[in-house]
Amino acid sequence: MSGKVYDQQADPALDMAESTVQAGFDPKSWDMVGSLNLSRQLPTGQVLLDLAAAGRADIVVLTADLGRPTQVIQFGQRYPERYFNFGIAERNMIGAAAGLATTGLTPVISNYSFFLALMGLENIRNDICYPNLKVRMVGTHSGIAMGFYGTSHHCNEDIGALRTLANLSLVAPCDANAIRAAIPALIDHPGPVYFRVGRGRETPVYEAPPSFTLGGSNRLREGRHATIFAIGNLVSAALEAHDLLAKEGIELCVVDCYSIRPIDQAAILAAAKEHGILFSAEEHNVTGGFGAAVAEVLAAAGAGARLVRIGMPDAYSVLGPPTHLYRHYGLDGAGVAATVAKALRAG
Image (cartoon, rainbow, N blue to C red; front, side, top):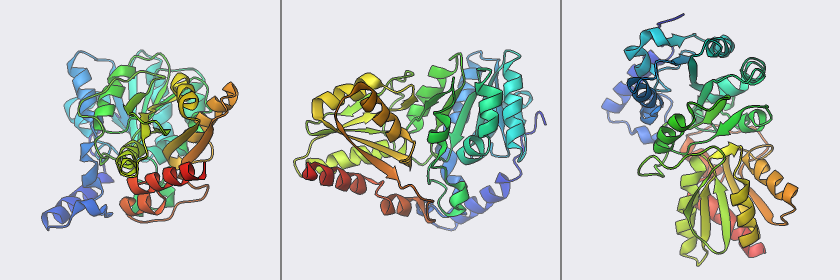
């Protein structure tokens, strides 16, 4: 289905979202109708347009009826011959991306993470990772960002599944500027890369695109009592927790550990030696997720540090506006601060 720019599922919702906003409804409530409007801050499409304008004729974009809410439809409008909308055929999309990669092109898939990483896991494994193909996958709306859409649309298991796949690099840019840094930095990486991102409504962490290297991390705040390694939406929550805890005399070091696989082992082990207690924070099931990756580093090195994992419980998530869900699961700034303070008091 080459050159198809229209996204059938998204257009009616966009019309409803726009009319709702015009009627005075506050989109910050994360209602179902206005949710599409909230994704417009995702910069993926613009980043790809910038790369194309700089001479990257090898880049092609694939989606499964989600070009508008994942913000790559603008690439299709400018380069319709390099934009492929597969309808609700996610597995075919993944297989086609693998095929395109064998021709020397650089395919970029942009789709909701639960449809891409969970529904398409077998195809990612067999079609892309096994032959170690140069495919870029951008999984948006990860974690519980979809709120009212239902537990089927919450993606709290993708890190646990994907980080077991050989050859696959897994990164989690935390905001729009981090995405602007991550995609160009890894566009020429020789193997497959999965970018785990939010929905475009993330609290800004960086004022400009930051340093972004595979296997790296960014230390954002200093602190002498403990270190928290955070990814995605939990980076901004950890920064808020840092400010809240400072009022209580607790100094928390905050690290954006954006590279999940490979992970920044040196930073983790240095923090373990410095503090003896570490925290991991993620919008993902704590079983097998980012925190488990941190734990593996500590265990393999015999670091002896205590690790407290902050994330979704090992259960299926409930429904509600994402802002309410973050508060319910202790994944907002206040919740992270409370968990850190409690653990430090326990010794």
